Amino acid sequence: MSNYVLSTFRFRVDWGGTRIGFMEVSGFSFEHDVIEYVHGAMAESVPMKSPGKPKYGEITLKRGIFRNDAEAMDWFNDIKIDEDARRDITITMLNEKLEPVMIWEVRKAWVKKLDSVTLKADSSEAAIETLELCNEGYTQ
Figure (cartoon, rainbow, N blue to C red):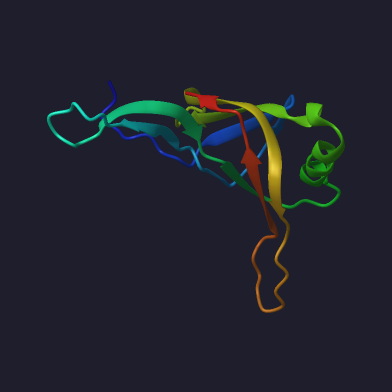
């Protein structure tokens, strides 16, 4: 076992057979609904609680915009006309030797929201786009 905590700045994203560079990936959250049940013969009126359906957070991807790169917008538009445009995505965290240390398999993702570039005259920042992806769950 390593004595070092994993760093979060080395990762890669593969979608639909294409490896794309992103500057940030967030939204990995796992949650269960809670089923509460109370009946009249219980000694206390505290409800029994059981795990319900699992919920998976929406994944947010941020990346720089490059000239003649419309892949994100194309995917956003494709989902409107073709439900098969959903994609399985693999997000891999890498160690200092660029070897995989954690892998998330995201099922049937599609672009819910695409925030394109913010134009600002007094800024010298990179042009960034943000994709918010719905999905049908993921495994780690």
